[in-house]
Amino acid sequence: MEIINQYLSIVIVVICVVVGYVWKSSTSFANKYIPLVVALLGLILAIANAYANSQPITLDVIAMGLVSGLASTGLHQFVTRVFEKMDSLEVK
Image (cartoon, rainbow, N blue to C red; front, side, top):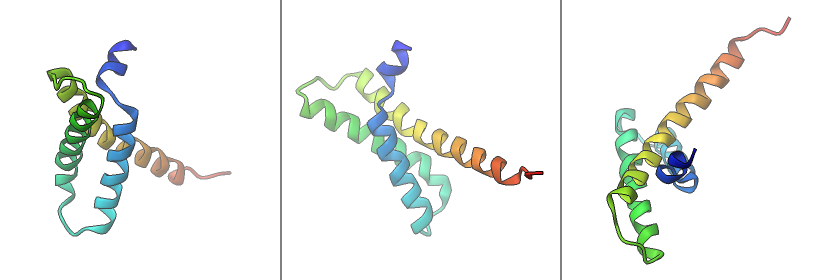
């Protein structure tokens, strides 16, 4: 569990989910670029957070940003599939 906390920032994941959702629903760019956009956004946010807290920019900070950004894509897909599955179930 500690390794998850080390390489995943919930705040960055939430920000990236929101940006990815807005990107998907409001732009005409291809959806295939969303993982790249949120990975880069996660990286930028992690570096900015480290800088704001006077921490060094290490490979761990870079990994946390990239993993958190990409995790937002996985989270979005998971939630989407769960709601699709719930919609397809018939209540009898």
